Each structure stands twice: as structure tokens, then as C-alpha cells.
Image (cartoon, rainbow, N blue to C red):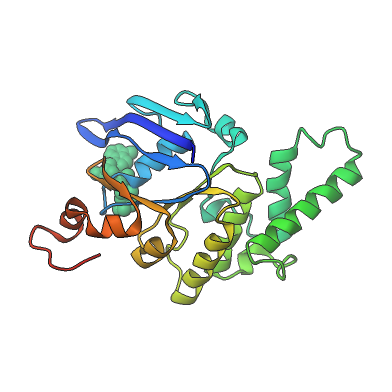
Length: 252
Ligand SMILES: Nc1ncnc2c1ncn2[C@@H]1O[C@H](COP(=O)(O)OP(=O)(O)OP(=O)(O)O)[C@@H](O)[C@H]1O
């Protein structure tokens, strides 16, 4: 498998605090890679540097064969590096279909320019309906987004990111605030996307992480201390110590 994303000695300092400490993260093409770590380990800070929302203090980010460390956020999206949006970016008064059509438009704005407007619009709505189907909202096309359940809104967020046709989807806590049934639906959705898109998942729900991930990287105090399969991470002494303390008898 080839590396789709690679960070090289990435560092982010906030004043005296080193939030990302020479992190070397590798996401291979096609895998579902999870990033875990205790509270304050630096997961969000790392994701923000990958999406381009935060500039690293030093180090490099390579994506799809290019050094993108200095590439602007919107340019990263065009290159296929897309972060799932937070709920605030869903237009709550628009329908599921309109929300997705707007996302498709932002991707295809230029490629459909030469089509007649009516045809371009039809193509966008067809693409949007296809994305709704992929994220399990095919039966809710006309529903106003604000009337969806919390879990369905998270499915729509994943859809908004998918509509941009990503090579790598950065998923920032897609199960946060969802109940058990909704979490289960999100797990099934991410399972169904496996093989279609490479994913980097930050998630506190360890049960979901260990079921879904092909590989897991563990971040502690801004450093990647281990990368491996679920079994390798479960058995890793440093990971156990980071999560459970020195006298940990339990397993993850
Ligand atoms: N803008 C900022 N300015 C100063 N310090 C920050 C800033 N953002 C994050 N930090 C600090 O950087 C460290 C890493 O925070 P970050 O939010 O990335 O961790 P996290 O692993 O995502 O945590 P959680 O699991 O609780 O969401 C923390 O000590 C945090 O207080």
C-alpha cells in the first residue's frame, strides 16, 4: 500500500506548550486509520494542521505525493483532503438534498461551467441524491436538515464531505453526542465507505475505533507513541500506561 498522507517531524507550539511534538503519522491509501489519545494529547491540533486551519511551527505534511505544508485550506480540499464539517456548517433551513447539492456545486463549480444551467443543476441534484443514498439519508431527501435527529445530522456532515469527492476524509469525532443506536448507524456507515475512501478517524468511542480501524496511531503529549493493528495497540505497553496508568492490569 502506498502512503497517502505523511507528516514528518511535525511540531506545533502554543507559546511554551508543545501540542504537536515531532509527530510522524502515516496514513496508507485505502485504510481506515484511527487517531486516539487521552484528553489534551493533541488530536484536534494535529487534525487542524492537516486540514490547513492551523500552520505548523515546523515539520512537513505530504499528501498524495506533494508537500502541502504551505498549501491553503481550500486548495487542500481541491486536492482531495477534506475534513468532515461540524454541525454548524449544515444549513438547517435547507433540505438534505439542497445541502448536498450545494456541496456538490462547490466541488463541480468549474467542471460543469460549460453545461447548460438546467442540465448542470440536474446533474448536481442527481449527484447529491447519490451521496444521500451512500450516507443512509436516501429516504429523507426533502426533510429540512434542522429537523433531522442528531445522528442523522452527523450522517449529513459526512455526506457534505463525501460530496467533495475526497481522497482522504478527516473525521473529527463523528460519534460525539450520539446515542448507542446512532453510533451503531455511524459505525455501519463508515464500514460501508471502507475501500471507497481513505479515512482518518479521531474518536473517543474506543469500542467503535477498535472495531473499525485497520490501523491505529496513539498520540500522547503530542507524540505518536505507537502505530499498529487493534491487537498490537491493545497489547502495547506504552499505550496501556498512557491510558491506564503504571499499575494497569486492565486491557483496552
Ligand atoms: N489555540 C490554542 N492555544 C493554546 N493552547 C492550545 C490551543 N489549542 C489547543 N491547545 C492546547 O494544546 C493541547 C492539545 O489540545 P487538543 O485539543 O489538540 O487535544 P485533544 O487530544 O484533541 O483533546 P480532546 O481529546 O480533549 O479533544 C492541550 O494542552 C490544549 O490545551
